[in-house]
Length: 115
Image (tube, rainbow, N blue to C red; front, top):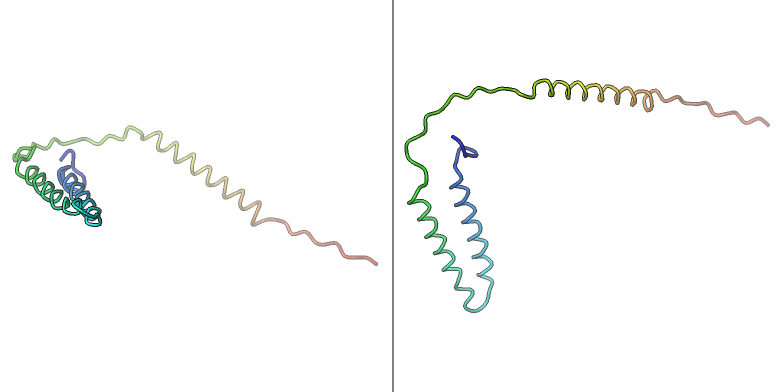
């Protein structure tokens, strides 16, 4: 199913975006004063008409396209292992430096005062 996200097509996201924008616009228009307050009704009716048009005139056909078996090829196989080797070497080098500078840091004796 090409062009799907989470198993649904782009039409669902278009409708969701439309209704989120309509609800936001209706909330903003409900705070307005005068005749602008009643224009929220026209915005809502316009969204209903757009939704009906999008639902009644689907773009795709009802027949499902035959599925073609795809062969998965890892083209970046060698590069992935080179990157893994580099990151492993960097990690081990950093661990060695932490061991030297923080864990095995020498503690020097303080000189005794002589009178």
